[in-house]
Structures are given as structure tokens and as C-alpha cells.
Length: 293
Image (cartoon, rainbow, N blue to C red; front, side, top):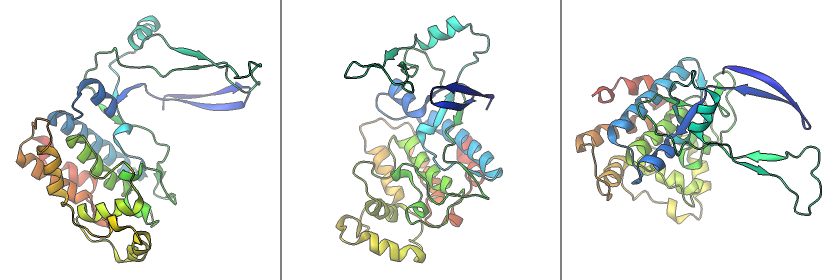
């Protein structure tokens, strides 16, 4: 955070926080530069390594992020301190303003804004993919001394202890990191995102996780799973099989070797444990030589 100030308006006084200006997130970069939906392996590895460094830094300071996914990874802006306002506006494009009107044509109430401004787009900017990547959006973050009762990470990336309403700590990020690493390299999350339910998700987790469902969650799983035939049996591919199938059997041309994907699968397996205490730390994953090759 660079600064803060209070803004007085018709709806009261608002605390405004000024943060470092960052560029597009990872999905936006993929949409703009990689129409096949997958990052090049070398770039995916660079992003993954930087994210792990950031997560390790957070965890060393006893901070849990609580909402780790690719939309919360943003590219740093190129050096812009010397840009004039005119040049900066030219780079991002002139702001698009839409004026607010009531359907009945009457005057706006005092607390309604007169206009809204469309978010700036980086579409016309040639982006340097060698820029740093930073973890953003700490709206769900927490200190280890004050863990939340639940989190609102997207369901398909949600750690199992959140689904089973167990105690939460910073290790929820390690599960989410495993899901995110899968997505960075493959181009899709390891679990379904469409029409997903907690019961179906846990059924898929049982196929992918390195360990068995903890006994303390078994009763809730039985209750959750009642009547859900889709989640009853674990008959799908395991983590390594699914990773290789999605990566090599797609129409996209692979640029990583089968050995790379095997080593990536081992890393994912160290993170995707049901038991939070069994998950590898961000530092332990970073120490894997694969990230430096």
C-alpha cells in the first residue's frame, strides 16, 4: 500500500487505499496472447515460481491469503513513474464514461452516482511477459492468530477443510496452489467448474488426492454423499493420469516433455493432500530443482 485518504461524498466518508498499479491478471494475458488457452511451459514455470516465492513470504509472516487462484495473479506494470498523464492515458485508452439515468426519467437521488467509468483495458498495450507477477486481492487474507470460520475461494479451488467446515489455517493456500499449478501448465483446473457441487467435488478430490479422506470428515462425507450417485465411486483417473491425459491428449501442441509432466505431477501430489499437515510448504516446493531447470 502506497497511501490512503478519506473521500467525503453523499453516502458518507469512505476510506480509500492506494496500491501499486498492476497490469492484467493471468487469464487476461492468456485471452489476449494465447488463443489456444494454454501458457507456454517456460512462462508457466516462471509464473509458478514467482507465486511460490510470494506465498512463502506470506506464510513466513504468518499470513494466509485465503483466495489464491490465477485471477489473483497480476503482472507488474512496466516502469511508469516518468510517464506524463497524457502518455499514460494514451497507453490505457481514454476512459469510457456512462451516465446514470432512471428508467422513469426522474432525477437521481442524492446518493446515486451521476456516471460510472468502465475499467481500463490493456488490450491495445503490447505487454512484456518478462515482467514480475504479483499476488493480489487480500480481501480473504488472515493472520494465523485470527483464522476465519470459512472462506469464499471459488468452489473448484476450495480446500477440503473449508468444505468440511474443519479448522482453517494458512495451509488452505497450499491446496489452492496445487490446483493453480495444474491450471497454469495445463490450461484448466484439475476439478470441474461447471455445475459442480460440494459432493461431486469431494468425489473428484478422492480420485486426485494423495491420501485418504480423514476419518473425522467421514460422517459429513456420508451425509453429503447421500443420493449423489456421481460422487459415490472413485473410478476416474488418478492425479498423474489425469494430468498427462489433459496435457498430452489435447489438440494443443505440448512444449513440455513427459518427464516434465511426471515431475510436475509429483509436485502436485505433495500439495494435494486432504490432511493439511501433510502438504508440502511453499518453501519445500520451491526447493524442487525442477523450478530452476
